Length: 335
Image (cartoon, rainbow, N blue to C red; front, side, top):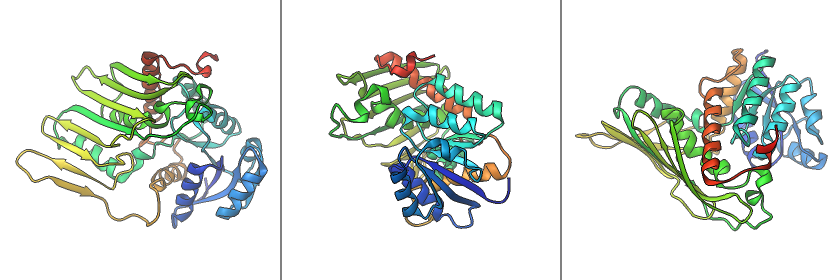
């Protein structure tokens, strides 16, 4: 690949706008946005005008057929990730796909197999893993700063007035708290401990059959546990904590894109850990954009920060949670 990575943005919602804004604000990043697609040409053109993008398409197929696009950022709701990412991979495009990666582990495995078969780069857009503070935390844990991990606690939730017609209440669209919000606590725990050996869960379900409020207890043969929760009917603190045999790391509200964390160790003053000030006005998605750009320019097919096997393991855990609480999506029954 040449010295510039050319991005195509698939979908024009809020998360696509945030990502595109962050990517365009990255100076000397080796990346540019050359095209955008939506299901309607009007939406794509409005997005292109907003961000100064040269080409706008009224279909996904036109975007993935554009020879000037190197990598496609899939920003649709997760119910369309399998279709959209698969379309891009079939067309020979590298892909960054929003999280939750897919609706279930089967769909995720299909995408991973397709990318590997075609020799293409694929990454789940788990921006948390690319955040400098999360990377610093994993370094400290790996170096034994808090000893052996015993407990991880994390939650993500907010109370919203979601009517029966809202996508978060629709099983066909992967509705519920788990895939939208619960993916963050689960991914956080598995970043540190890997795939759990045991999964327990309880949930409050909506009349439509999606989870509104879910609690999870994950267990590992090492004796470590993770207590996680997510909700779309309650304002949870959205904090995280990692406790080991020799200390603890606490993340404040917004743990999934932190500005600092606090390291506690016996006999020492609490240590506030921060990174240098990043570009002003950016959300934090620039870190995942930079990682994809770096990997593509290096000729890599997978990111070491967001490995595909890790994304598959998270999807298996999310499937297990849904199985425990009785949530099924129509996609689960499709072969």
